[in-house]
Length: 213
Length: 223
Image (cartoon, rainbow over all chains, first blue to last red; front, top):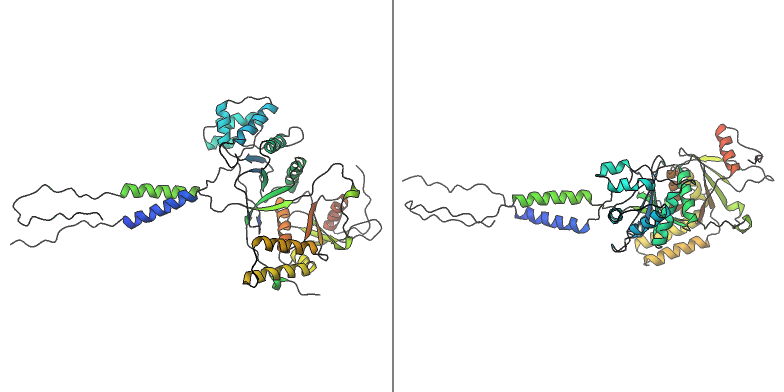
């Protein structure tokens, strides 16, 4: 009689719970994902205790980086059919007597923040990859000689009157630059600004009151 | 797992063709899922940016100085931001008739400008904090909008707290202005405004930094 051999079975791990968990996680992430748009510049915003959230749409954002370079972004509105960005670019093109092809309008509509003179915008639209695109971000001219930022703001207001303004400045940006931008916005009758900040908690209560003297 | 045990026929005589296990190999699926999850985790922006709302008074070119709201000098606190985290403050308004108000140096730390603001705004701060604490402990139950409106009314009724004029020097950073507005929010100051810095104030800062504070109202050179 040969020895009774126990049936050889390869050790197997039951992957079903893992797959279940992964599916759940995946579904969660797919549903909650709101993509982080590519930012025009690295900006380290200052901290504040404000808990108010930035609006999701109808927002134009002005970025001010450390060196005082200015970038601009405006969204397409709540509905992807409104194509605010394309309309704004059309008005800019008219103002500066430039022509863009329908393809360029379409691409521009899908891109995000930018900061360059309008003549370089075509190069930015057509850039092959994000690295090449970055090279075009030299800052938007906004001095009195060539106030392109002013026109972008003006036309954004005309195309989408409900657009709010957010200013995302670097903590180390000079206040003078920010003030210039704010003055420009006030000329365009925008008196309410959302300053983008990072959230910190700072709770003080009655016990923090200095003793009465 | 979906595994079908293939029974041995018992006798080792006939050899049957091995039945193919009907198990599905899930490894590629798991691999793919791992990749997708990593992708979504990295691209998702969880924390949406927070904003601080400031509303500036409308700028009107036709507005003359006469139209500007008058504020009592006793309640005026001027905060001058001089950059490098330096803050100066003085009370009242400098006029040629009166002795010059002296600048006091302060900073953004807990014992800096906040102490002064809390001390001055004691009544309103106590009122708002008590109201907030009552709501937190559940003593009173109100909706968010009512809560905010009540605080707004408390601020409007305030007659004792300082009226803060924030003036930033050309050396000031964006951080400073956000910090000081934040201080206003923390200490529940009812009225504050960001105003342009005057020529006299720039002179006051320079003189104080140099160690020789102005005693008399300076003569302003017209450019």
